[in-house]
Amino acid sequence: MTAHEIGVFVFILIAGTLGTDIWRWLGVFGGKQLSEESEALIWVRSVATALVAGVIASQVLYPGGVLAGTPVALRIGAAAAGFAVFLLLKKNMFVGIAASLVVLAGGLYWLGI
Image 1 (cartoon, rainbow, N blue to C red):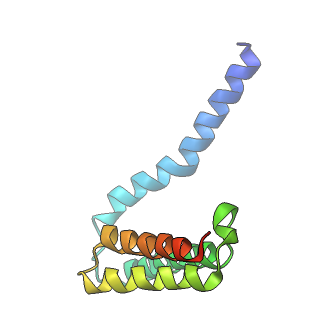
Image 2 (cartoon, one colour):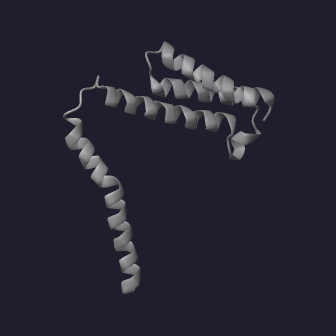
Image 3 (cartoon, rainbow, N blue to C red):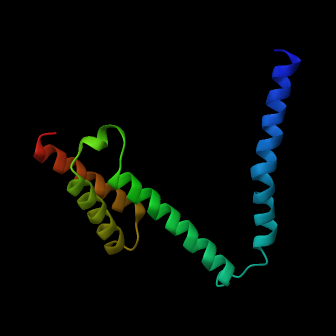
């Protein structure tokens, strides 16, 4: 490995550390001062929830790969069923995801896809 290649790896290591680890450490030290009910933390939680909801909606409505060949109604129904089970069973994420997969797989089997 040449000195130039080593320099590239060192640059990636430093840039990656500056870009992520500093914010993590600031969060660790600064997070002790924040109340869980503070407006700043409620806003951050809301933005994070909205981003996750957007990614899920994007994957359900505009999927790539094999899932793109499935009917939109089936994908929406599977997501809705999984969310309903998630809420009904005290916000158990594993069971909600499993329920949506069962609905999706059952629908694909029923459609012969």
